Length: 493
Ligand code: NAD
Image (cartoon, rainbow, N blue to C red; front, side, top):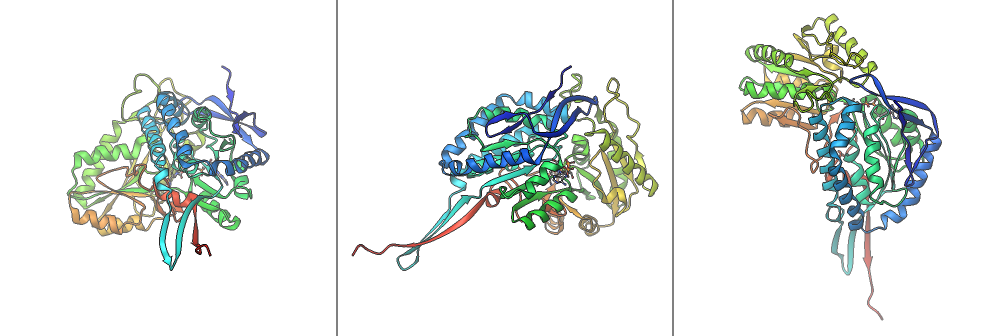
């Protein structure tokens, strides 16, 4: 079967990429190549940035109501084609269809919130700042923003920034993940239909070379990055050196705390979805459970392991399982599988008990896929490699704590601070957890506390290198700069 090579989208045109080579994009359920992504060069990125710069003056002068009219249209097109987009997403990334649909829904929500920009971008006016003098704060777009995306949410993550950047009057250059570029290629076909002026939105496919060219390009005013912690840290440092605004959202190791008074049936169901949805490849996936007290520890070990055995591991596009809510697909690549298997081996070597071993799983008819079954370690100690490393696969460690304070200490002692949740009916303990846990997003009886689009999204510590979080009102501060006017007029003589 012929396999398409993805074009770039620059200055309103589909262009064959100036590239160093092509990368196979695989369906991780089968290992088959479904497309080829160009490894674009810095010269290609330069063309996209120049197009975005050239479009900026016209776009920032376009009334905000006109700018968001394009977004209304985009929302309609994306909704109309949501099933096609969801299936493309599943094919290249491997999450379940219900997960892909939910991802897309969050992308729509971000477009909807950005459509409120005519109100949200309004500035302030201080009449009578002094005698006969008024003060005024204008919230103006900055220029060209560039974004580097991860593989795990190829539809949603770009929408944490893109619709807000366009609505505020900035222009944009996007680099999708080279591991999952097809979803945004399809979305770009719909963006192409909303008649944005050429250059306002551009896509350049490629690997780190394109990302690095963005960091060095003098025409890029701000960078949004979402991906792993080492890259996020490097990007925030380079942006600081190069005078660029930057939000760099990074890795995670999210903990779930089971208190002795938790509703066990609800909690276990919720934990399984949080840990194994998307094969553990969500930045908000839980991968460590801390049970407080001996009794709850024994209950969690027994019930969580039993429930994990029930997770259906399959190709999510297999019609037999396509609409099951708890299907777990493959991990993204052969390389990711090898890395995760190595970390499981490390856990065994360092003495954690492998209570459920997903290493040998086979999915009939999908022998070329990168599947790992649900894997659970009990008797794990805080600080073990399996506890402190972001495994980004279907591997969970269960730890014991003697008290809530000890559980919070375990969470706070590790480097990441994206999300954490507590299961309890006790308001006092829930409040303590909310205030004392050093994570950016907290759940109370919610396993995946991913905030809706009109609230900010982002972590703390090594999970976020920025002062500002993504989506909602918060991101407008990142995408605009205040200009403060002080003015007076004398009466005509
Ligand atoms: P990754 O860091 O390997 O790659 C992310 C992107 O960065 C890709 O587009 C890649 O091409 C690019 N890149 C890699 N090295 C680069 C470099 N030196 N310079 C410039 N660009 C470079 O991450 P991934 O494996 O695609 O995604 C998984 C990671 O993303 C996990 O760590 C996950 O926790 C994180 N993530 C975080 C959030 C969040 O909200 N904090 C959301 C989604 C994913």
